[in-house]
Amino acid sequence: MANSATTHPVHDIVRPDKKLLLLYVLRCLLTGPLFPFVFLPSYFKYQTLRYRFDEDGVAMSWGLLWRREIFLTYARIQDIHLSRGLLERWLGLGTIHIQTASGSASAEIAVVGLTEYGAVRDFLYTQMRGARFGETNDRRAASGEPPAVTEPDDAVVLLTDIRDEIRSLRAALQHERES
Image (cartoon, rainbow, N blue to C red; front, side, top):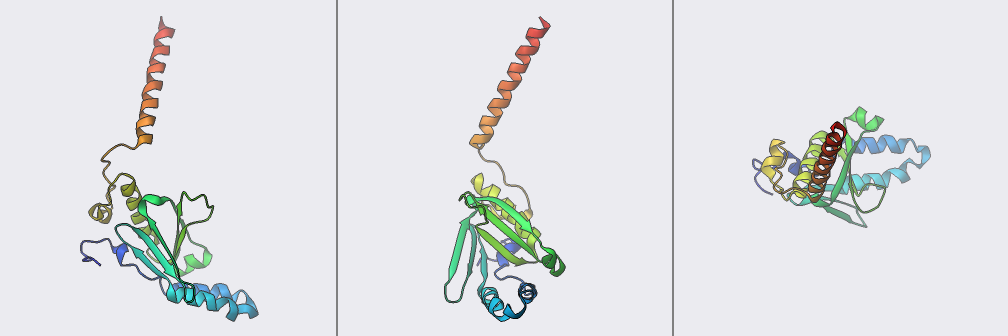
């Protein structure tokens, strides 16, 4: 990993907070006598859960017997949601749901057990916007500064053209009414 003085603090997050295990225990206690059977998979997921935030994207991996790994580049991210249930708020945790344009209604990645959920959400938004405009500059992301628009997006150009056309039509109609 690069020098932490030149990278964003989010890059240092590799594991969920220890409070996530307590959250899993509390949720599994609600199952009553099924607690051991429900808790064991949650425990192993907590023990094996790893995150990686780098200059290219977000990676998440977990699993003991069946290892799962997901990697999303910032350019593929369509939407980011932050959720905090009652127990999560009580424990000071949050979950970031990252969605892509895959057509699935559920999130592609759910980054669970974060205490720095606000900073991670803001970092992901900054990187997502930077990737869309061709810029993934860590200096800008670390300062919280929005990415510089180097070239206009096709949608922005189209919307600007539509706006200008509507203005010219409005002016022509106004001129016609006055005459």
